[in-house]
Image (cartoon, rainbow, N blue to C red):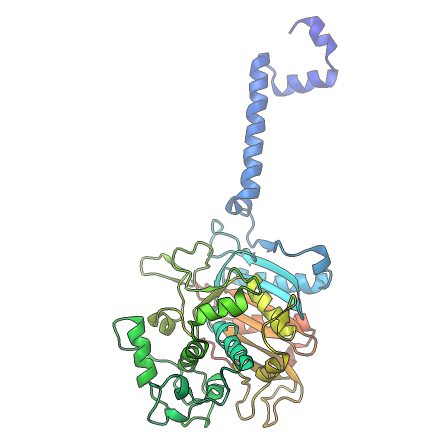
Length: 441
């Protein structure tokens, strides 16, 4: 560089150039600057666009939903939110599940949604996205799908709780089954078995037909409470026939579309990249997008007991609907009086409401008149999912996990659910009873 040209340049510019490019000719320096800028731009793009790279160095990523805003989260104390995140993160670190999606709300408002951990073990797997990660809801299908459809049909006057099942499913008759009612299916007092080891038939349709016509009672209807997947499979068929359309189509038309629950569906399929796996195949391939429930899978994966998939954002929308009295964003789905009936413990059924499970604050099962003070109602799912609502404060908690996917530690999902609910609604641990729902479902 000519001496007179160098004298016209600022001393700082000269020092920077000499430090970074001491032996480069001028065009070499410009090329190096362009190259360095490209590297920085590429790294920045990768960091923000590709989540696997962005969270590669984070053991348990905690990612708020895009739906969270400062105004919304202001309705939830930072201590409660951070405490809830710590409960879930702690279980991830312990090895109970690779990740989970959490939603907390009050009435018709969602206060926070967050993804914690990953969909699979290992830092190269995708972090959980509260808006996008799809979970197998397992037995949450019973309330979010089948029970909700029954409530709507009752409101429509198309179905009555004391209808005999045989009215809608004529092949379900004989050997005492003629007296089984819709109410008994909802309260698990139908006398039907919990499950079936194997259902004969070459196709899902043949197997369902066999179940409906040949399944036998193991107790007199109304005599006892036995949590029954079979009962809700039968109930799903009652819904389809009373509605005049398949269960998924009815729910899409009457619930999912009006509430903008775009991530909710049955059987997304094994090509579902957004689905968190729940099992591994014999060759070690993650199993995702098909129901974890073996009986539902034998029947095609679209049944009244299991098979529904969703995001925590959508399940939170459903929780807000229920906690808000059956309406959300000005759209009424279920009448408030119907909802109150279904979420109240039914006489002689222990902790069973109509489809929902109900607990009493007194720490005992409801008596013949039900709970003096309802403590919580909701449901759980075998894959590690749950929805619980406190009817007094109207606070609710949704937790979705894939705890059945290669767990590295003993199952503590019940304790995690209780801790979360206690924290969010402000109760102490000794006021919470163990969830009596079969942990196998």
